Length: 329
Ligand SMILES: [Zn+2]
Ligand SMILES: [Zn+2]
Image (cartoon, rainbow, N blue to C red; front, side, top):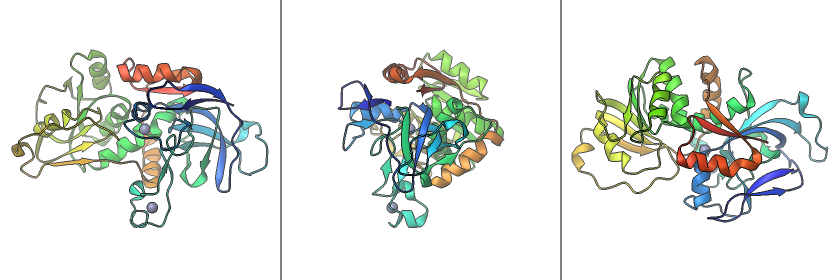
């Protein structure tokens, strides 16, 4: 099969041919139809998040059909196979205090798809069946792929905003464009903060129901009750704190962020909260994949052939598309 492989920090992904992997006990072999590109993949490429044992096939928003459940059978025609999605959380030990308290996202022994386990930048992938989720029928595989990380982890971040009626998004990319639609359906107001001058992202946000869109340096027209910082820019955290009302929460939604500058206690005072969101649980996946079709979430995608994974990542870094990038093997 063809695959795009990470070899070391600072090197572009390399296109290789590899044998089709075999599903071990409890695993499914999937023919990959689509795999979303995530900002986390840039952090992996740049070494900001470490890949412990390269080479590694990246990609943790996989949509594929099951071609084999059994160890020794050869891949069959995928036409009739069930379609599932594979997210970032690929395995947990199931026995630590975190796993036993509904917080498997924090399991110290967790293995992550496209970091510790080979991912979906390939024609085939294997995944632990317990971490595969049925894809709602109304979505094409390409449209469903961004739900599996941007959607899931975004949803977890939104849950940490409680019932905040006015929610701000700092960075309006793959995750925010999904959450804006969920918020609209839930009757919340959303406020979109983008890089100064990014008119395309601001227009896109308004199109998806944002009541206000502007530059991250501007204050919102009224105080927010919660904000989610998706851009990996620590300097946005004090800006978001200044934008939230007393009692408001600022959720940092990424796996990596540049340093947060010192800020006066006054902007945290009055019970404002800063917190991060890490990974996802299977419950998050079940909830979001049930919610997305009910809320009428549609994803905006730019598709790339597998071999152009490097271009997709470069376009993501440069902000050259709105919505999400998806590789199609
Ligand atoms: Zn991701
Ligand atoms: Zn655990």
